[in-house]
Length: 238
Ligand code: UDP
Image 1 (cartoon, protein in one colour):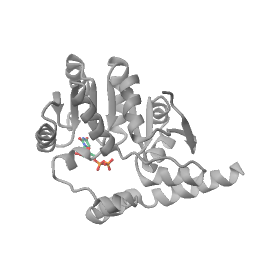
Image 2 (cartoon, protein in one colour; image 1 turned 45 degrees about the horizontal axis):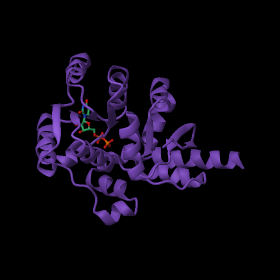
Image 3 (cartoon, protein in one colour; image 1 turned 30 degrees about the vertical axis):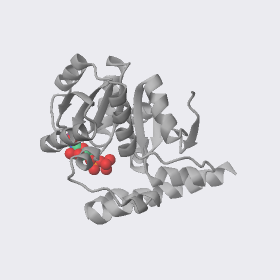
């Protein structure tokens, strides 16, 4: 299986189906980025972050923004929500008896997430976890290295989690890493996901914004400006 990238505003995005994304990454390992318009905006201003995205081993369209943008550019590709991909990776890791680490969120959140995940997947071998409010990256990294987890889930918010996973990439080339934003809060039971019908309609962002209005300033004006940029790219392509 090989990667098949489509491009949006200069960023390559993989066009895997959900299942083939899981198969591919367990075969090839490396860093998965769950890309969204906010990350693209951030990487446009931060060359190091762009470099990390360009050198990722898989870039999946996490939300409706990138999926819609790609549609405008003529690419019909599946949305792969990070939280769903993260869960599928855990299931596969459990099935394959691989080891797992969880890095991020508040202490009680990561602890509850671990308990709930173990309840769901009793065979899951979590060899290390820590909250995401550490000041000494190197210490946490050396602890992770000593455990050599096959799968590392980082939920530190973006771009912190992508920088953190990038540091691990050369140190643990056989591991799979993914940045999962607020997923541990959901797995801990602290934050509810949107009802399935809204998720299927691509409206999870709307639900999250209604539940957490402070998110509004993250989405606006980023999302509309992103779509305008994509429309410009589309016009220039013609
Ligand atoms: N977080 C962390 N360390 C930090 C900053 C954030 O562990 O220094 C955690 C935070 O507790 C939350 C997650 O990172 O669990 C960020 O969630 P956010 O809602 O920003 O992510 P999104 O899902 O929107 O990408």
